[in-house]
Image: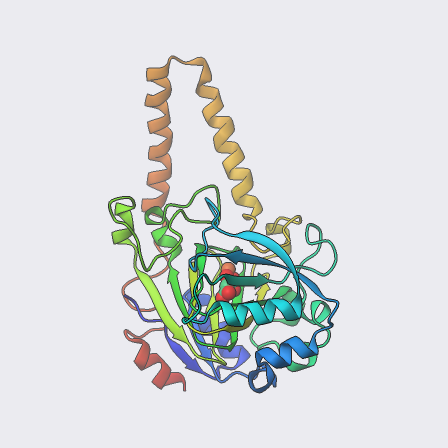
Length: 332
Ligand SMILES: O=C(O)CCC(=O)C(=O)O
Ligand SMILES: [Fe+2]
């Protein structure tokens, strides 16, 4: 299991010249994220946010949320009731408990606008400082997230670079390199059929044994850099509150303008996949055996592309040293 390196209070310059270009996850520790760290108890959140605020949350009797083949429902609650239920839901002693998870959506129409923490939670805006690692004008969205203890959020990827700021409660993060995508059973885009990488039935998902999981336990105040396309699974250990910030690390025109969640595939890929569909359609006129023969020839082209393009990362962790400990010592 490769360790996720830890960097103590990295400067924006160091982040942008060393951490971000490595295309590997990293824990950024002791960055200033504001007074939320001391203030955001469940009571404070419930009392500060307008009693009129309604939120749409995931509710489940199961504490490992599955997106494909859903095991949760969306339900609308006043924010303060949600906080109370999320706190209670995670308690071990309760029977028949329910688990709750909230991912903030834009306060306007979520189909056309993106989450913006400061606008969505004006009462809390002053408590949270965006970590000073990305260029402010590239920020795409900022998302308030809150949920019960011991709740796993399904394995998925997002298409933008992201910093997940863990504010309340510890959380286990498990990430997978995009190079391992062949072992992760993605279905129809950004979600995996494997919803809980800590409990995988290898009879059903045998290739998963080849995937390397990059794991860390985040403490309150830790900021996890999740590079675009790194699959991630998050399990809260305690009642959890976080804010994550997505930003456009590539030129704006690469992103789908209709994306509001940060998870619609990049336009060059959308065009490429349409091209593949058109290419395969050309084979329709042939008998089945020849269609399959030429489809294999097409696949060989893609295999060749993968062998001539070198993977970005080799054995070391990309920071020019072999072990995470070395790195954190070096850059503390
Ligand atoms: O920690 C969570 O609740 C989910 C985080 C996540 O998926 C993200 O930041 O992209
Ligand atoms: Fe995510």
